[in-house]
Image (cartoon, rainbow, N blue to C red; front, side, top):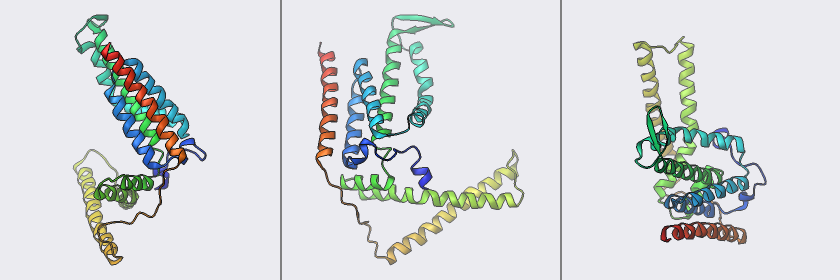
Length: 256
């Protein structure tokens, strides 16, 4: 479980490690809101530079982070590639008889810069938090208890479900099961999914009974004591000033 949840996290001594998790969550939300609200390319380019700076402060491995961003870019590649040819405007070049407009290229660049800046900032500020710490920070920020419980239980039982899946797959291999394009394979895989659901329900009932035996009343105590410090204030003020500068630059461009 720890290998899955901590893959790609920051190494020891990263500058953001000492920042209060609540400040990082708030900073990530503010960065995303400001970046999505802006549309001027120089401002979006500045947002991407700021996100790269946050990645450097987080200590995340550059290669792994860029690979995750490339995976995200793969989802929007088709949209970005089609925009220049589907947006009306002044033609810039022609490809296979289709005109690419300048407005479409600008729109595609906006989407690409916004998506990459927001994802990179989220990976740097929130993606480097331990899942349990993330849940505690959301609880202290006033997030609904059910949402926090759902997050913590999901983190706790992902590995349990994975272990159950591996055990069932080993049992099928022992019985010489080989997946193929036959009804027998489809039926066997359906039984596999069904058994995982049945055992997950049975386990959830056992876990709930055990929690009630320990006095669970619908609320989980948060044992950590988070506290804002001078370093958190400096981080919040610095990020706030940079975001305010982005907002002012965007407003100045719109009003001119």
